[in-house]
Amino acid sequence: MRTALIACGALAREVLALKQKNAWQVDLLALPSLLHNHPERIPEALRQRIHKARQDYDRVIVVYGDCGTGGMLDRMLAEEGVERVSGPHCYEMYANGTFANLMEEAPGTFFLTDYLVQSFDHLVLEGLGLDRFPALRQDYFKNYTRVVYLAQRDDAALVERARWAAESLGLQFEHRRTGYGMLETRLQELIET
Image (cartoon, rainbow, N blue to C red; front, side):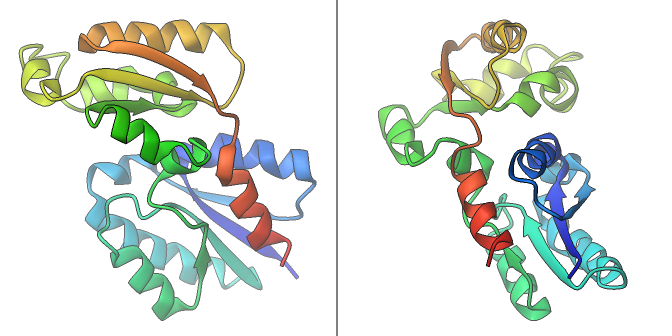
């Protein structure tokens, strides 16, 4: 039986690493991570990708959190009869059961993952216009107090880049090595059932 994992582009590297680590016989199909800038577009983009994948695969699993769709993603997946990894977003998955505590400690927490650290310039600075209008930083981040980098890999260069990202936003920096967290466990449960 051929299985396709349709994943968010922000999770593609990690899903490929998990595929190799666990010797999963699956194919990865990724959607652009920039869909997160318009979460209302995620369900329809996924629906189209599911329909296309069904032409070549017996089973489709979606590797997305709700990602700000307000439940629209789960409603569409129910209509299509497709499962997804559980969870509201990748931060909760990577935090491995500590996300609620992190938010309780400091509701004004901005999270980074390996992907976001590597794409910070493009997704945050350029994406929010901070490269052109630095004064917007105060408007966007005035209620934030810290950056928590949930690191999937041990990479000193990424830690330093995450530290720089926090400094560029004027926020305190915290680094937590989480690995793949619940993303691996939840995906494993879906693939191996």
